[in-house]
Image (cartoon, rainbow, N blue to C red; front, top):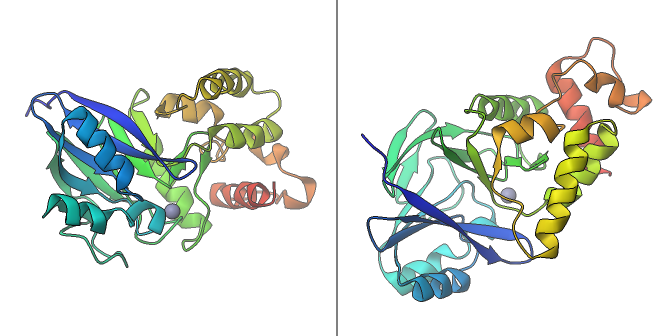
Length: 259
Ligand SMILES: [Zn+2]
């Protein structure tokens, strides 16, 4: 089935969240991803003359879900897609790893990506993906619930997406992430280049997102933990001879937590 053309708009929430609005070009309907707040969504929909049709949830954290109840109060019944095993109790369309679901005219493949939380899912098409708090530009989510092995595997699954797939994550953390990436790989010129571009974007109050899989594979230390030279970039006390990729990933994540 041919996919409907869509536009994806960032709606700013809190200090550094984006609620992504999915707007198909063939209707006045819209869907939003991870609405932690309702007011900016209602404001955007009103100004754009869009009717909110549904919500996509990546995981249960309050800054991704607190807007859903007030949006339901405002718009009436909404389809709320989300993980089947989530502690959040507002899901109407529970999703499992391997599910395929058409939302807003897009055919999404659902993958379970535990690590940041145990319920986290991502919504993938070959052209665009919503990765919540799993994959950020130049970074990844903190491991609040999952193990380093789980998060490494989740990121490896995302790395299989087509190189030009556009990645829409929830947070504008890119510049802070790139500062860490530059500390890990001072010789990596792609990191310097995207740092400069990011500074220009932020100076004009523009998002640094979406990113692409190709870009992340060149700048994101957490996507690059399997590269042989990454072992030498770790602080000496974190270098483990013959370590597994996930162990290298775990050491990078621990380093970033204290960066
Ligand atoms: Zn989160």
